[in-house]
Length: 519
Image: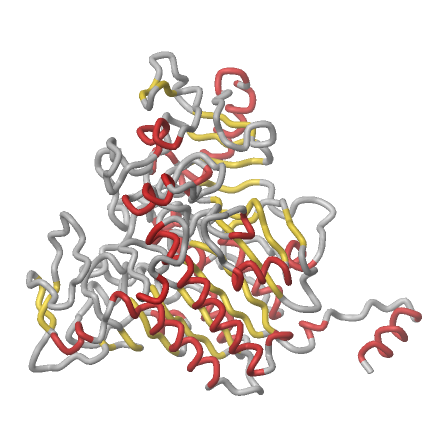
């Protein structure tokens, strides 16, 4: 009947409305942690196997120029959920989970609050890492405001990063399994830390029952099952939005024993294999529920891969975390923020396609708004651009022509316009580890290790005659090997002018999140 009606309307010269305006699709957004541009088979990886994630590319569309809102975990999540660059909040570094209150104003329109307004059931399962409470978390009481105050009906997961305390699960507003007679105590080590972080002075212990429920090697299985359980509880009469934010593949690398040794690049690759299994569980559940054809599934990552110890071991085994891109997590070079982005929606997104146009994860707010018929008001999702046509069709011209690049270092705040990338100072502004084996080994110091060329450096050291800032032509130099700052002063001036209003919009006062003071 739909096809007959469409034919009649077409004959009358009336364009038929797209199906999604008649029945709102379910949305599943899977947000991986530290997964690099080269960490999946569909993006060229050969030392790992990711068949379930790759199926999204085969059955949907792969984007090759998608970027996270920041090269850092917490501000990237802020940009994803609010549709605003994290600079609008003066947000640069990761949120210290144990002391930071909620970093998003509860009056702000977010992905979940917008979709909830549109009739969606909403859930956040996995890593939060945007702070809890006001002005700081009460670990032995109600952790509010939090995800529920930003539009999620349900939350279960890690309050912050899996490498930092308090190493418990939170469900809605409370620590799971917390015994009032055995509270969480700051300054005391946790009883369950199999994989302590070197140099970490922040400890939250006590609460043995709650801590014992958090097993590093079972986090993947727990989040997978919680996602499946929530999906199966949904009513067929109401669309749903699941935001699954995995802790994979952030360090420490702690896959279940069944995945250990299954890749060709060590524990780093084994953790990717477990991530693929998690995604497969969600996809299988959508099929079993009979809703896969009316579900938009998006898979992406919060920032680029990190060249930590396990990342270095993977590199030695021949795995390229960020493919051929220059740089890593935290930095302004492409490897810090260009991320995998896969979208599947049967009947709406062409199968097996590759899309090369520019996309930023802040765009999902405006895109989901268009998908559900919600008109954004002034001040909502201020940096978000509707990319629905990029997902489902082939725009006559690029939807996004410019974006701001947000690394960890504020002075490295850069800009992308068309083929040009401008970074207003030297280096990538990322991690500062100098020696092989260092946990924070990265960027310029890592150039000899990664065997990457860069015109500003020799043997990992900045040349004395290196330009004061950086300009790259990604069309001819996608690996960012040649800084052409001195050759195109007119382009530099144009990009400086475009970047200036963004710098000026950064609020005064103390930045949100931790920043490496050496930068």
